[in-house]
Image 1 (cartoon, rainbow, N blue to C red):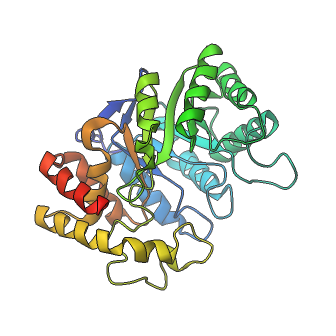
Image 2 (cartoon, rainbow, N blue to C red; image 1 turned 60 degrees about the vertical axis):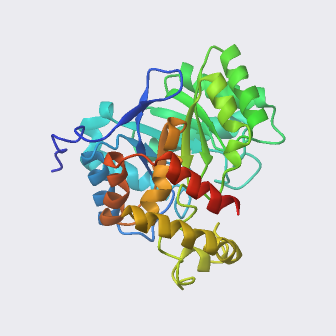
Length: 328
């Protein structure tokens, strides 16, 4: 029987999520990768419980995470029932809906029909009565934003979500979504977006909107799908994400960025830290990002990344060196 570590809150740091009463750990655990049917359940369990034992209270999912879609939530539901249910009030559980889940015209995007059905399915898979945060996973170009935001607002009114957020919305869409929700009496708690040394598009207006509107800011893919680790320094391994034709990470992207990554690696070596640790510290620099979402394929990888919580922040000189590399 699992019993959480009594010292789990001794080292983790927490940051307030926008203009809300909720605090999130500086490092959150995402179940996007490594939680599908092809992965070992015991490894998943070890990762999640070790994370919680070190103060990672926020676990992030989506209805389409797997493979196949739904598998990550199902695995978490099994783990929650067996181990984490006594700690429900210490956990921030989030899920999302927006990508393809089932056949027919109601199986993806942002209609009220899809979002409400997705919420109920996700709650059932996870074995919980409510999510702490539920997101619109992506904007729908054909559904009125008022309909999508109205569905999120009703989730809060129904008690099926304590907070709501949006993900992958551009600055203009974000500002509109936040205002629509506010008119409905619901605060948009958080925006989840891709942000890393190799993907800085969020700096082109999104950060400013979030700060102005008092919306929290959580970054996914801080390691750029593994590019900001030692994984690709000597080429593209046959078993890597970049070697999979169906994956998000493409070989040409790795080849295009490898020069910058090797230069960044030299900075990490000078500081005596891992490349991944440098990348995570960079995302959290300046306090603009509330929490950074990391995945993990092993407990060892998890622990290496969690070590950043107690590392010194990057200096202005560090950031200047990094910016010079990234802009060359």
